[in-house]
Amino acid sequence: MITIEHILAQAAAIADDYARAVADIPYEHKGVLFSEILFLCAALGPERPERVVESGRARGQSTHLLATCLPECEIVSVERNPDSPDVPVAAARLAPFGNVQLLFGDAMRMLPELVREGDAVLIDGPKGYRALRLAFKVLASCRPRAVFIHDCGLGTEERKFLDRYVPETVYSDAPAFVERYAFLDAACRALDPDVAREDREPGRSYGPTVACVPYNPAQRYTSLLRRATLRGMLDRLGARLRRRLRSAER
Image (tube, rainbow, N blue to C red):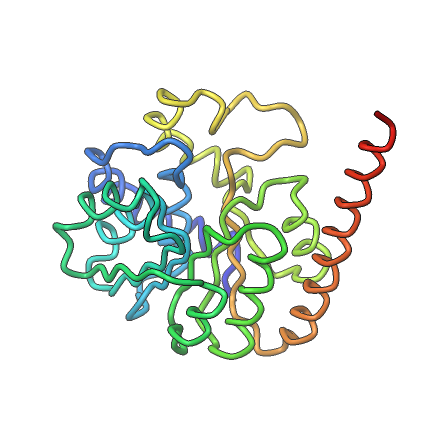
């Protein structure tokens, strides 16, 4: 099982090499933090998976970092919108890498077909309960080594759900990890001071935060999928009712 102690030990072994590898990679606004990809690499340990399957490529920040730091792995990246202005930016950034495959389509449909047993999965789109549904669908049917979900900071619905029902989840905002590796995000803070504040308020996460959900054969992922689907429906219904109430008050 992947634990924060495991991640800290592995990160200590690879951090210097990682810092050198990413030193010249520019940060893309709203992209994954450099420390978050170190967290992912450390969670995977020295025995790398054959593939990392990613959903939500945008401008290719996470894809670029994965391709650089996991050159022995095939990086399969799925982006929903082929007409996004981000597409040519990502294509240009990733053109030098022979280990990257760029695909387009609906990750909710494609990932359960693409992911193989033992793969690592990074979900950076869809968001919210749809991200949880995708994660549990993949964990139930494909048995990846781990699923990493981006944007799972404190206070998010994803974080609340995982904390309650998937206690084996580990997060990149763990204080011991942030204390050691926040320095990697200096370029991120230079571009966007609020993206990874070291002087953040109590109860706020450091950065967007990656959740690592390791595959657990004892976990009932089909049940979690049903629960996340129901919670998502109730969440959307509540949002619609609140909008109607606000409209009626005007």
